Length: 406
Image (spheres, helix red, strand yellow):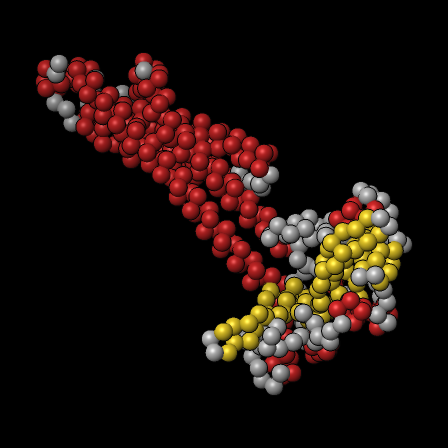
């Protein structure tokens, strides 16, 4: 029997029971739509995380002081050792593949301008910080090495600071703000970066010379951490080894194992975030696959009912010359038509649902060709797997028994 004839018979059979056919396909539609939507959310989250990690800067390495542990009690990081400005200077001098290095100090304070005020974080750093973070200025200029050496009260502000102190789009360069009653002149405005992977507003920050923040705002003699940049991406691991060697020598052999200091790279952060995102995607896709399984069982159930209802029809066709393979193929095609149709509708529904998630929940989504192919693959597998047994049962009927069936 020609395939076109088998397809016509299958479509005619499904058309006779439109509602039953649609309800049978509904499980596949929901399952495929769920798979598409969940994978789109997972892929969107990975894309956002990768973009935000890239926003950390160019080939960034972060060095944090270690934590103190005694008698089974662990204290916070920085209680067993301190990073210093001299450490950053040593990295710049002794690490050939480290392009930039800077100490960091961070604090927070209420900032005032005129009759407006805003609480934000203040970071003390070297001018190289903008190169390390690959963070261009929108307006103005960076503070200089001379500002750093002289502990000059100048600063660079993010877009959020400008908006809350001066108004949206207002000029800020040249304005004076007060931090802990000290006047700081704004010399530059950072370009907008948005939120980071933790949901924090990266534009809600003030950058000032390291010595200014360290001495005049915090009154300390150490750094909270160090930030550095490798000369190129392939040299990140080499830069880590050089930094570890220099810091180890400066601490008389103490290793960077987390007890004295810890070195983290963009690769470390990216791998951790990627693994978390993959685990979430697999979990969501697994839950969605349960719906597909239920849909497949529904197809199998309806096909078994259809075989029972059409036993005499099968007997007549066999009696006039239809072969067992023709009957097998006919019922298998019916199962495939239902699963494929459900898969197509499910893909369209999943894409639409993904757009609705993006619009109303403001989550990043990305419907990839892989997820669409996966949806088609699942629907085909369900049609073949769950349609085979009913089709085989129909093909194994003996014509004489089928004709006697009431």
